[in-house]
Image (cartoon, rainbow, N blue to C red):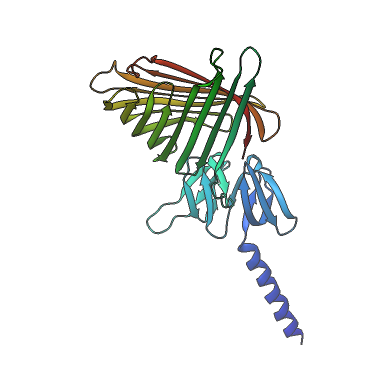
Length: 344
């Protein structure tokens, strides 16, 4: 009987030791150890399921080194992902277990971006709608409507953007009393970027626009090239691009159309100026390959002031310059849009 109890106690001890051996372990600078299981690490904080203390949060900066009893997903700041068992190393570092001909290697703890990060949410379309309406009655009688639409989706390796703008104004002729159209135009744009690395991307884009007052029946541009994303954060985004484009123009008062191949160079700049104020700006320049002085340039600048998390007021300026406009039209065309919008 005594022998049976001794066997049971010995078996329990062996099982307890086996559980302790097969566990993740954290070492602290003062020599303390914590065993259990690493849940995950995000933003410099490790969630650890301790055998004694339960779930605890530990600052990565307060860890000397750590080890795991099985392979674990460690994401480094340079976007390297390690899927190996972690072993203890010298202070401020961690090691990965070598396999076969692969030697063990040590890394700085500060190089860790995350451990076992939760799956990233699927990329979603975001965007905004804005509209403006102006009605004047008195010495001048006029009515104006305008609208803008923007949508974008940013995934890890690509980015898709779609936008459109429209405006129309009718004004009463004082002499005849008839309503005459003094503004009637719209434009649309679509762009796709594919990121070959964190900064470098290739792109294809297209534009289509009409302007009845400028005698522009249609302007179509299809282009592509390469770009570089210098900065991309919630508060600041800046990228530059260069490529080639096919530009086609047809004017209402001219029988001949204009078709040419152009260079394409531009930039996109977004900046949060204050907590509720954002500045959006882009510029694209199309000089003809055959004759650089023959060019088309388009630029947009917008200020958005949010008065709720989704509602905002907007003031947008669109500037176009065409060295070969329709007969009787100016090379420079500036449009102003004022309205309120909703972000989704």
